[in-house]
Image (cartoon, rainbow, N blue to C red):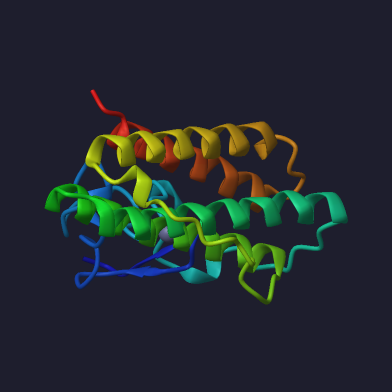
Length: 187
Ligand SMILES: [Zn+2]
């Protein structure tokens, strides 16, 4: 396959990594058919062969926009931390692996916001003890709730973002978190 660059997270996708995080997707990339970025989940239309096509202009954000992006940054770190802990608590190896992959994807989303906002440090979040949620069902329920909250957040603000790139990021992440809702929704 030709190397592709994700215009959302900036990662390069090639033969060595197109299958990464496969536990966190409903569909499967193959080397002949790349459907999404394995790192952030962006659909194929955001993947380009020519990285010069990616708009990397600095974002001069006013205070209000910065606050919205900063809250998104925190939300993704919070969810990344949650999945990391949840992967330790899950009983089933399949769910463990899915949580691990979800954790990596949420941290990638966090790093996208970090770049956009030009933030220099990680948010200082209180470490929560999730052990009382041990057990697959409870963890999945918590996960699903978080994903729904994330979708609500991105959908609430996407159209209020004046910068096209940020609007794209919010719309893409809302889409990706909807896949996570499907994955964690306990039938
Ligand atoms: Zn990506």
